[in-house]
Image (cartoon, helix red, strand yellow):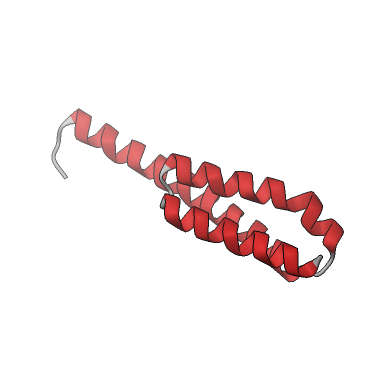
Length: 84
């Protein structure tokens, strides 16, 4: 690492962003896992919009690719339809 103040600041910012992105990604993965394990229609009706919103936010922030977000949402909606 160079000894410039701007480089040191960039390292600090990257660390903060990495931690934030990991938090949002892990939280979303946990929400998806919890949704998939439930077998009740009411749970899907309540939680599915929130989980889809979380996935969209990850794609918007660039944490996951937009196609991955579309695939995740598609799979969740298919599973919700089969549970119903």
